[in-house]
Amino acid sequence: MKQKAERLLVLGFVGTLFLLSLFFFILPHQRFSDLENRYLQSAPHLTWDNLLSNKYAVDAEGFVTDHFPFRNKWLSIKSAAEKYRLQQENNGIYKGKDGYLFEKFLEPDYTKIQQYTDSVNQFAGNHPEVNITFMLAPTSIGLYPKRLPWLAPSYPQEKVNQFIGDHLGKGLTFMNGFDFLSPHASESIYYRTDHHWTTYGAYLAYVAYTEQKGWHPLSQRDFLIQTVSHSFLGSFQTRSQLNGLTPDTIQVYIPRDSSPTEMYIEDTNQTMTSMYDPSFLAKKDQYSYFFGGVHALMKLTTKLEPGQIDQDKLLVIKDSYAHSVIPFLTRHVPEIHVIDIRYYNGSISEYMSKNGIKDVLFLFNTSTLVGDTSLLKLNI
Image (cartoon, rainbow, N blue to C red):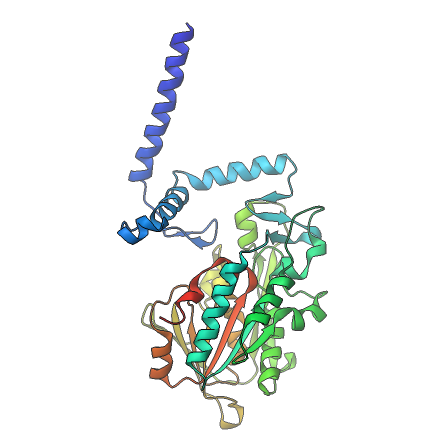
């Protein structure tokens, strides 16, 4: 009897592995996860370099993990189990005070951060004629550590930002987001359920940048401020699958003047007459209302009166924190080029030379910068 039970157990185990393997190969593989609001790992490329550097093994593990059969169901089950255990953290997301969710932030690898700053310094050294500003914004966990659950581990982002500021060379201007955000910490600078700053937080960044440039920022009275969504549950809620949260609202600042902006998206060879895509307000990823989501390369052209122009051209090298900031800058710069270095694989130096660009703004959040190697592509 015992031997029969053991055989059934082995057959069941082997059968389950066979079915999961079969489903892995026959089920379609998604490129983007709406549930996690991120691009999934693509199939690994088998080359000698990737094999010897262990990149193939890492990519293969990520590919299997990201495309595991019925992964969304397993994530939901895990989240429900964590909730009933009264855990304050799930999938790297803390449930904090005042309705805020926070992404876990632990001590980063400073050796890698040094490599990123060295890459930026090399870029600045290769372009001494270019005015470069590097803006680094903390995420919500950096500005609101007191809203974390009791004893939740977290590494101070102030130390990371300070390290980066100290190691960036004198050939550029460093703007620490703590400097211009901390005086407004009691205001709604960040979404509660998402990793981005709110449009008001972006407005504060815009004011700080224009003042640093010696321009005159528009006041909030110069905009018609509209709420376009009352139902935004962002990336933190998506990853944690926590329920019973109060949705965020999304605002848009519409200039009271009538200067139109045309947006050309290189990825799709499309020209849009608006920087906003209302169709995303009916989808999970409502933040993609700004610019219609992430694109490797864009060009924004605004018809400004001569008296409105503070600078002819600007290149913004960025992550998605810039999406709600750039629309403000179109009121000062008639031609703005936008590169998301995570997805752009061309030579930025050649692009700048071809388009006559003499001013660059780097705009990143601390969490994205320390966890991504894309800045190493700056000087290819």
